[in-house]
Length: 110
Length: 112
Picture 1: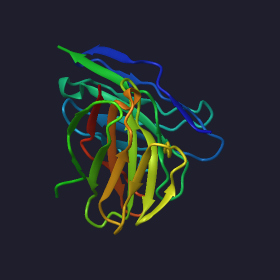
Picture 2: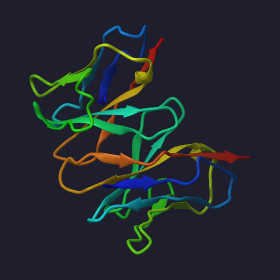
Picture 3: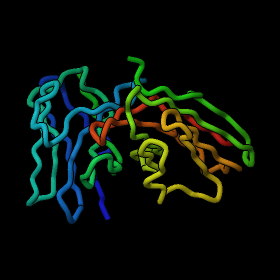
């Protein structure tokens, strides 16, 4: 069985401070990991996926297979980063379902 | 590009009544997903279609839930009869060949 854990329901940081949203997973195979974001009154959208190794909106995430983690990081938080962030796992193979964590609400304060 | 379209956006019904949700995926996307999102939780897959075939419906409560995607394009998810515990957001997503999943805005169901 696959499982995704996001230990923080809410993370509050000041503008300009570093951000780290934690994500741990449990899966016996080789997973694909994703971060999805939902801004207020908008639909869920992909932020980044580990196989792309991209930096999107200043966010990065590195897959650590030893620690089974995929933490999302940004060096300097911006007010527009305030949103709900979901970590998700796919068991691999085309079209497989996503298993989501419970999400972390990021609030960036001025 | 309109993205994934879902209708209705909101639905309020009394328990034991039937309800249906409609989803139109992004044009050309052969894979369609229905997810259920309870308050304070992440989305959970109910059913996945490859074209018109349901390839993963293991999480769909088949005693009251049904879904169809007759022509391999749009899809309908039905609940009959609805229960109080079905109050949630129902999300539809689509992807092309198993690539990135794009989500619709969801239908928020309230069962009274």
